[in-house]
Length: 109
Image 1 (cartoon, rainbow, N blue to C red):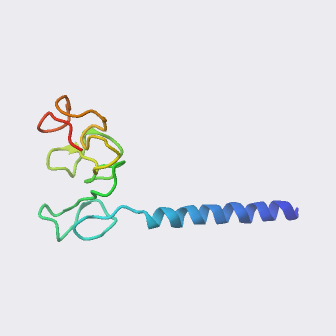
Image 2 (cartoon, rainbow, N blue to C red):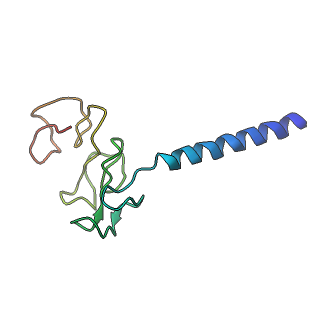
Image 3 (cartoon, rainbow, N blue to C red):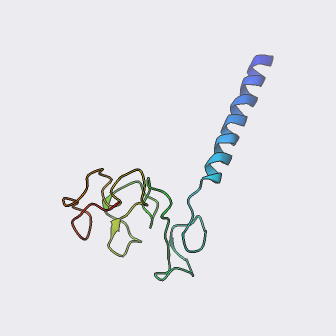
């Protein structure tokens, strides 16, 4: 019985620690520092929050998707933050021409 209590406490602390670590590394809008996505940034020229510090998520909406479907992007396409050597439009590690999601048709990093 005592072992179960210790295990439950240890599990709970691990969850809380993970949540605190996630909050520390939370992506922020480059214009105002908010964790919000979408409309409502009074410092952005577009009025929308832009998160350029996370290469795993769309800078406009926070989705992990690439391509069409971003309701906050001016191009209606998801654009991720730079990093990890991946194209911000499609996630490919390729360079040069061949990106079907980029407005220029080229991979951008």
